[in-house]
Length: 558
Image 1 (cartoon, rainbow, N blue to C red):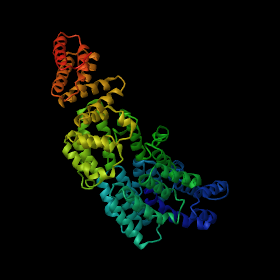
Image 2 (cartoon, rainbow, N blue to C red):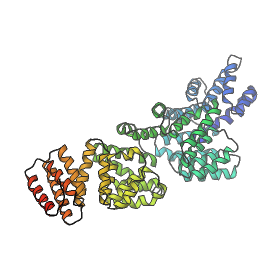
Image 3 (spheres, helix red, strand yellow):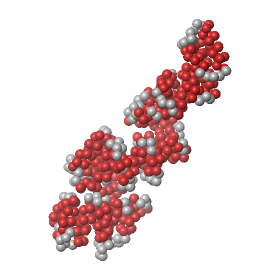
Image 4 (cartoon, helix red, strand yellow):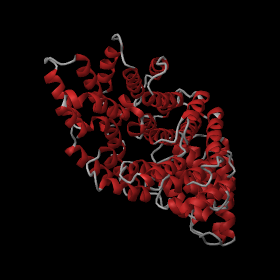
């Protein structure tokens, strides 16, 4: 959005409008001064058959189409114009601007570079356009060359600020905008750019305050209202943001065409991904954020491979892109047990978390925590998570990871407290969550609660794995009763000799505790029944010993 205003394409207006329309089309000039490009197009269509210069009519049609965001129409018109003999250099440069907005960077560069020795005003526009094209094509050498030719004029400085913004140098962009605004208080739109930079820096309340300066004069600005909706989304929730965009859509005119794609995109985000598969795919090559949000949607739907396919070819340039590539590789690595993908994820996280610009931000610290999590260095994980946990008290995914780290360093009491805070049903039904909660219960001497987790599960591979965890962890902790029960079920599901040995040991452990008066005597009846569930010669010997003790101590065993 910043380029559509900071770009040199705006310099078309004073150059063409003031020279041509004052003499020939005073009504057209009035429409253009009022930025009524739809009305101007209507007038041009009406006058097309009149005895006026066809060249001027086509030029203005292309100009109006450009400012309405109808770049395809502008492209076709300018394409026709530059093929005509004696085409003016400014028309060629304007065509390059249209190519830029359509993403035809190579075509735009080739055409614009052919313009030699244009007038001074057009030469500056040409330089700014080539400056931005070099950035889009990733040509650092040309970028620096064109940077060196920028002058201390408003248009060039705005162009430089836009590049700073696109390269995530938000503070540098803010400094330029504020310096210009200091001497040009009437340039209210600069407040929108400053607000956008603060939004990118996660200062949503500051962004809102600065943005309000512009909105007080232009309450129906599509760009400003859209940014306010984004601030509401970050500060409050999707409902508040959605209400802002719906109000804008109800009042929108054709002059808002340029913003409709980003508004549709944002509405999907505000509604929690609703309609993502219908709205986002066509926008993937139009808005960078559309690709990223479609990847996030697939991740939330557990379509890990789809997410990976979308982001695989993306060359990350911003922290958010590096983070998302890291998340996707981590998810794919865990799903496929791929050490290669996990290694890539760890490197991406380390790159962001270790960078000077991100190391003290919340996402930067989360990245370092994720890096150490994948390296299984949980003490280090907790250092970073503890530094940001106050921002995520009710965040289920944060609490899930935080609890795992706590449990991994043996702090089962706090891990249990955090795990039970989680409300997300999808997380609570996940085996990883259930297994960690069961382990915490067992380590905190609450084996009955761990057993109840198993009883609530349907028979599956996950329930079998949870049984194994309960059986072994309870045995290690001397909680032999629930260990014996778990081994008994395991043995019936899979007659593995190891399960019999585990059950036999657990039953003997219970027997010892009964003798030591650490278990209720009537538990012996159930222990004998558990043993008899196994067809093994050793059962009778063990039962005989237990029965003898029961008889001597008058313990009824039935």
